[in-house]
Length: 101
Ligand SMILES: [Zn+2]
Image (tube, rainbow, N blue to C red):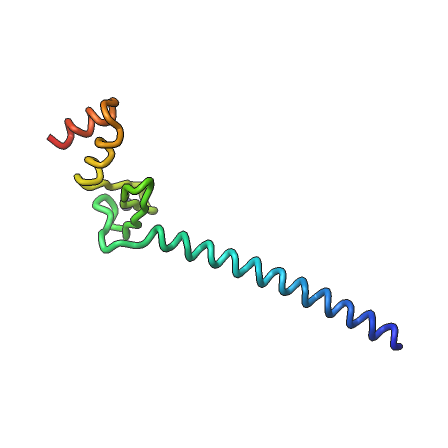
């Protein structure tokens, strides 16, 4: 009888540790999600193509507005100029400069 109780206690302890472990995992997952949300946030803009809300992501310090619904990605002039400034004389820079003219 008393050994059963000991067994129960051990099982309870194991269960409690297991619960703590999963609680910790959940906490880490939530923290990660929150971090990701800080880096990608819904902006006021709507996708010009399909009208869904745009999400702003910052990739290597350049902001890009992304539409999760249709996959559209939108860069404003300043953002394109940032890319050109970094890329130098590559094909993409020439192409963007032509578009911006
Ligand atoms: Zn869209």
